[in-house]
Amino acid sequence: MSKVYGKETICIQSCWKPANGEPRVLPIYQSTTFKYESNEQMGRLFDLEESGYFYTRLQNPTNDFVAAKICELEGGVAAMLTSSGQAANYYAVFNICEAGDHVVLSSTVYGGTYNLLTVTMKKMGIECTVVDPDDTLENLKKAMKPNTKCVFGETIANPAMVVLDIEKFATLAHEHGVPLIIDNTFATPINCNPFQWGADIVTHSTTKYMDGHATCVGGVIVDSGNFDWTAYPEKFPGLCTPDDSYHGIIYTEKFGKGAFITKATTQLMRDLGSIQAPQNAFLLNIGLETLALRMERHCSNAQKVAEFLEAHEDVAWVNYPGLKSNKYYELGQKYLPKGSCGVISFGLKSGREGAGKMMNHLSLAAIVTHVADARTCVLHPASHTHRQMTDEQLKEAGVAPDLIRLSVGIENVDDIIYDLKQAMEKANA
Ligand SMILES: *Cc1c(COP(=O)(O)O)cnc(C)c1O
Image (tube, rainbow, N blue to C red):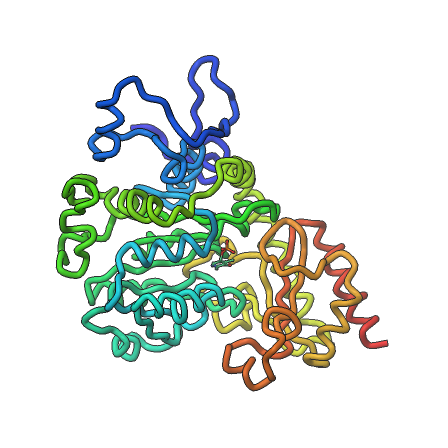
């Protein structure tokens, strides 16, 4: 038996394994097309009778090496990169849902995902019921309908910092014969592997910690291979009945545990084309090499910053799952024993006005829309992403008017704390 490597080793060594004389570093296959010797072989590729690359709108070797590394980190069987996290979540759902189907969604998911499912996919005829992630299993079951095809949640919600009870949601999905899709962006596979808790499909915005340096927008979908589509062929005809656009192949018959990712590649990438550029996949891979190391630092820094904020007299509240006082501390201990992530939300006693004032005095932490990269940054949703809303509307959207989202970077933690301290002092002056 070969040794199973730790995640730190997988981050560095997995995926590209050069043969004698080949480049040590994963090359960028900067090519739209791939050459074949015979007409017949090219034909077999188009029939999915033979595997091989033919056009970078569907697949590219650089992307696949990087997807394989993320797949290994998550403990899945197959994975694909997408051009963004939004595309990953869209493909993950649309691969098994069509007009007339229904999705159950945790209410605290990232705003982009919420909009995708409740507004844009609704226009495509896919209905969505939004549920409270903290509700009891009994109550959550009321949201399930005969046409429900998946349940969707986030390991750690951005920016609400709600830790999802993944096992509860897996039970909800599986009792109904549908898969659980988990967006694992904030936790990363270093801190949580949702497959271990019953999730079936995992997605990420690789734009965040995986890239880690705020250089490239990207996404990934990973399949655990655990969900048995063939047990419910009537629910998942796209996977279990013939695809006429490929001479009637049946994905589950031909590709087994690779069915979900193969279908998403050969149908959705072919028709919608949200592929990640190989250049970006190359940069993503460099980010992944240090992911384990960076997550450790993000978490230890964020823990210290959260404790500093909680003890500060100007701070009204702090939301970080690593704090013992936090509502999600217990769930965090269960699902995220190594730490959650670097993102903290908090409010000042001086409220909405005070937040803006304090942020203007920060010198190390920059005001940016981004989260989850190496540099410390802040965002005040009420003044930025949600600025058109009144205090009432903000509350309905689950964003407190005074909420500051602080993404703690990997700088020296004393410098980050010093910056926050001096900004709060100056804001009071
Ligand atoms: C940012 C984010 C997304 C969207 O990803 P993009 O790469 O920006 O398209 C989806 N889910 C979560 C949890 C995110 O933080």
